[in-house]
Image (cartoon, rainbow, N blue to C red; front, side, top):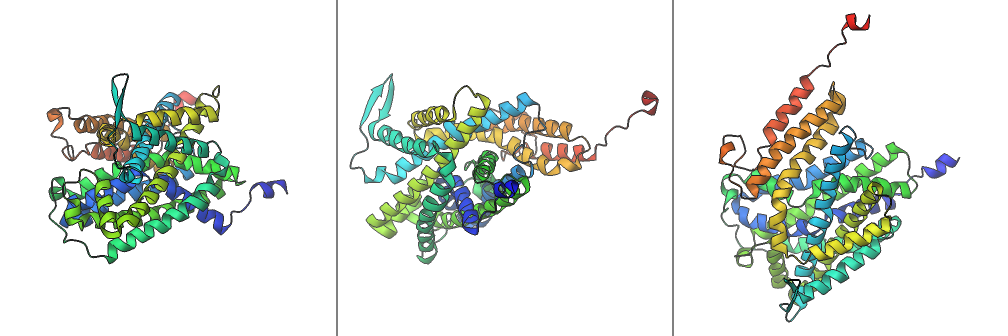
Length: 448
């Protein structure tokens, strides 16, 4: 009887709440600022660019969540312990205090608070660094709020999935409806890489959302939340995690398609914009005026806040397991303070720093997902996991160096190098080679 009580069935409302929470964790800064700009720049080639973006920003995160469920949360189990730990630490740092979480706070400030300020230019010097006063105060309040909610992870499903996300979804649906119902400008010509390689460029732009990396940690966070809810059976956890993943993927696809279309039909409001946040803000101001400004501020703040709560929670749980001498709550406070500090670097600088890192680490994450699904097909799964991920890392470093502006003319001969995807062919060939390799048979003379 005790087992049945422990492995309780989740209600439809609970499952929907879990799906909404997963969607809310993903829908953060990058998901709102990159699609409008990509839509504007891709112009007539919007459909191909959007397809590429949906591959890395929706399909890959969905597949990654399923891979985490398939591996029962131990997706790096076949790697050497040290390598698995280093890779996991790198992902948690990138997705947490170094880039994704501070970026979410910055976007919340730029789009959710700054438009209401009469003057946001006041600065002061601290240790030789120029800091914006309003941005600093906002960062402290924003990450302070996220910290308080992350201190109680058992209540995340209720506070995020059942309260914050439905409010955000209603606001997003209202925004998307206006995009398709209000005729915009004519779709213009594609520019830059969107002219020659719209599909590849869209795929690479999808990296910027960081959602495939986030899936690796959100998958484990969701399994942990299910355990707290009394679902301890691994098959039941997998079932609910996959259902949540599909709900989140459907929500993300809906948001991206509407934002791509918004950018592509932006016309004058998108001219000269250096990020999608400017396009989105200009559009809402034009269509809805002062009410629109409040609407957008609410959507962006909620989207960024829910993402930061998920990231801080996941990072704190990971580092608490790694260093048990510090409590989970201590890590929540430390990570929140680091996020608030990094958030004062500035949005454009943070994005430019993060791109080379993402070009390096994304291929390894994608390769990890691929080999997880093929584990049973490999005759030597442990060796296959290690060699495939090593190849992905080597060629990912080459793509990362190129993105950082390092002269890589020596390797120009490599397929897809100029597009920033030199890792794809070598990694794919390594996977095929590992599938073809047969386990050496034991020598009967040695056994006799």
